[in-house]
Image (tube, rainbow, N blue to C red; front, side, top):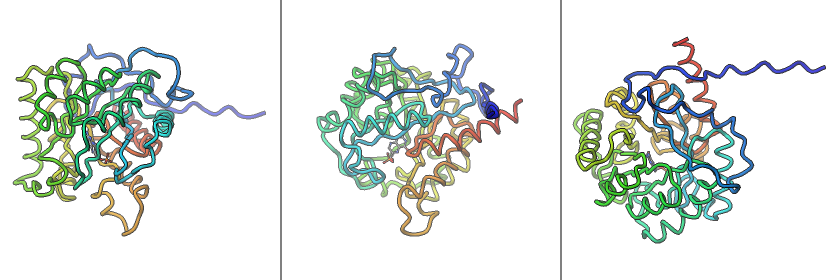
Length: 326
Ligand code: PMM
């Protein structure tokens, strides 16, 4: 007779770490069951209610799985160009515990050239349509207001703009009109020339101040503050030293009172910790450790390539926090 496996202790719900966010007010909806417990047969299926993104901080850091539909992405370039392959990869990330899938059609790697809005939409819209039809929360990674708007119509649940609305003057209106949550990333210019903008006094205070200013500008334009998410933009006009300083003083970001998203996965500054010649996948373990550390300091979500590993790392961090609050 086989012995039943004891249930895993999964902290269901506990208080947020660090500053209380205005979007984590009691009225916030109860967080959904962890995505890993949702069994899905695949992204193509029956229509489900329009998926939404949880902005509350339930003490469980969420995972944004990266789906770059770009031929030149440094980490998975060219492999997921076909819609079917992209959908299959998204389904795998969901089964591994992703809470949402971040779909991007334009590479923002250092030095990358821009693609046309038409090409960007050709890459991302069919995927967004299929994923959201299947009830999967999709984030659209774009700097173009027209793409954000089209993605919202296709079912996207969040707009992730690495320029925080600076690249396209129409982005704020789209955010207001769609009512979707909006990621405001710290940004100082397009990829081709961003390394020249990596000059700071105190990088932590400068990034904090510039993000705060960006959020204030959007709020003045009419964006609902409860829809804003901040992101330090690791690697965007930042050296490895800048990135580590920002992570090391993470409370400067959470103290602004908005959810914070962290995108460290497989970035160059992670690779610099490793021996020369290690492939992008070799960056997953250190990336997952960064994810767990960011979670332990109150990150709302992490943007990652290897969802399975990040989920395990976050489970440890979440359980640790649960233990501290039990
Ligand atoms: N990084 C990249 C693309 N999109 N979005 C947010 N919000 N934060 C990031 O750090 C971020 C992003 C570039 O990384 P990739 O080429 O691995 O997607």
